[in-house]
Image 1 (cartoon, each protein chain N blue to C red):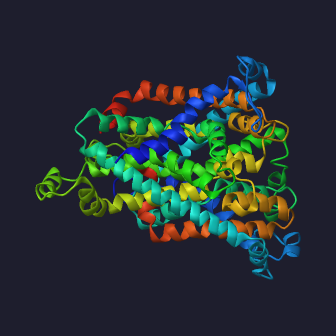
Image 2 (tube, each protein chain N blue to C red):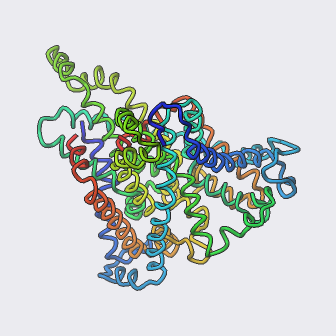
Image 3 (cartoon, chains in turn yellow, brown):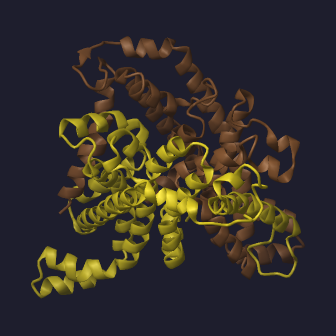
Length: 277
Length: 280
């Protein structure tokens, strides 16, 4: 258990445990992949964990024929819009929290801290009521607006902690030059906070992309269906066609896998930001 | 400049929090007119055996989740904090479950645990071919396992980051004094991880209170009511039985229990630290 030191004694027990857990993680993922390549008939005949003897992409074809691209596109719109607006409004608010000399800034920050503790489940019934009342039920906007609201607290927290690190002298010198607050925000704060924006942006994108409860409660028709909900409806629709359902699972995770490969560091630090210190 | 964030957050997060209190005192089917209910919903929820069972199941699920996830995450996180190359590779792979939506995970395990075509037939293992999700005795444990599959990677990350913060000098000094790896784990690593353990356990507990989508897709609350935990009971009461008032009561129970647990855990162990962080 001397893992924190770089000494030479191997940690045999830890290694055994870690490799066992690796198997627990990898077997289901491997299973998703091989099953998605199996012809439907072979699914009932072959060993579920064997490599398919007649590997085929037919299951992917069946998924794409069933409007998967529409659902994919809906998810892209909802995720992109929610993340972009969340970052913009949270950065503006963080700037106020950091720069404000009144109690107002500190109070905004306190509200955000409390907001992190509000579970979506607890608010879902009134959110449903509000969305119906303002006539947005069963639209993509019905998914975007509440997603933004529930993403703001953590985003604000992370961005504020980051902005506090910007030296006071940078703000002062811009103010001396007669820059307005907006100009300081755009010319100074936005460029400097890029790493934090990337970190929290990737994290929130993952949350929105995989969100299930808002789509389940706030949309209904196939036109507004997003990916997680489509997986659930595929499961009902395809029934025994398990390869097609799991092909849809593979397609649903591809963008997040791509994000993980490109921006692993941001995603990992986004997940642990504010907690693991 | 703070206005857009405050308006969005206020309208879709703060207003609903008060709204759920108001809705708990009305009869509403989700579509028609509302009518005053007084304490009817509260009485109905308190005397409903299904909801009581849901509360009990939620407590049971929470305890089982923490008992399963905390030790595994702690040991994996401490192990992964080492610097060897292959540990970095393991850490990369361990992260993968976090990329999947709950719906995707639930669908995968439904297929994988199928008694006729699932992993049991692959490994020719009798004990793996049980009707995991159809047996009321087993279903809750399967749910605990699948939740662990999803969230242990996250808590492992927290412990990994926490372990890396421990000053190396502590280990070097204790080695001078002749302490072995096991002694170091119990006398340095564990005490130094105290706050990490509190944070992680709080997140696990509050998370366990709100698991919805995973269980919804995996079991739908069944078989019977065997996995109908509180968030699921709330959803089914509100959006399937159209009793929004009663469902609001259940939602409020969720909030209050969640806040009480997280405040309680922090009060016991790490109150001062939370304060210092909130002051930024």
